[in-house]
Image 1 (cartoon, one colour):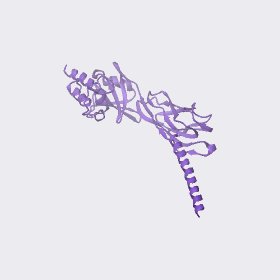
Image 2: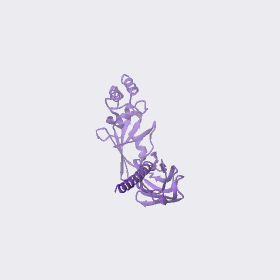
Image 3: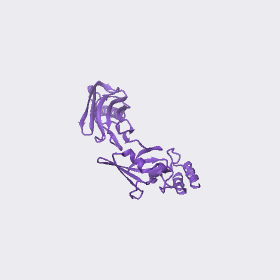
Image 4: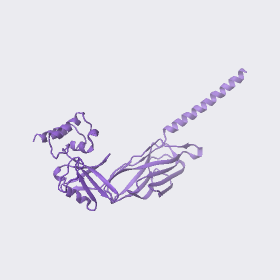
Length: 309
């Protein structure tokens, strides 16, 4: 009886040891799954051709994978998909996989452990766009490991859907090129001087489109009115209407004056009593008098000096 118990215990110890090794192997394998990323495409122009790269990092090896890129078909048209240097010779793709989707797959008899570009998808951008903010997202439908030894990877460690796509038409007035950047509620149109922000000059950028202008409180503005911070512009192209909030350097409160009130608001931000997020992008851009990307004491000093003139 004693010998039998010893044998049972020995078997249990052996089984636990094997299970422990398997758990360690599984945990180690799970910790080193490949990471696939989409290249960041922050800004392109309407009518451009743009390359979207899918890359792999921290790759300890996989044998096959199926991938989908999702995009806005009203903005982009896929042209081609090319195999990357970190892929396999066995590469399949389909630019017409579904509405707003392209597909590609890679497969190899041996582990693929190279890092870098897996595939590049070429898109054409609609040339009628004014502005657009969106993303190109990656999904990995399946990813498998070394087929010959039979283990599979059911999911990747991390898929970074970082393909932020921002499309903006170049907008100019005679004295300057106006900046355009995305905001949570639309887009911000940035100028450096109220004197340059003349409606008729801005409208020339949208000759074939419907353009309407409003004050900060929503009142329609006459064609002769100059624009300043917190005025809005609505530009309609087909069924798409884009809204711009105007931002003019140093006129933070939008009263058409560069005065002590603007310096006061900048000072609140610089001292931490008001955040740029609370102020909003249009006004925080206006408060950034020196254009260095931060609202600080330097901006307060510049606007304070203007207020004393």
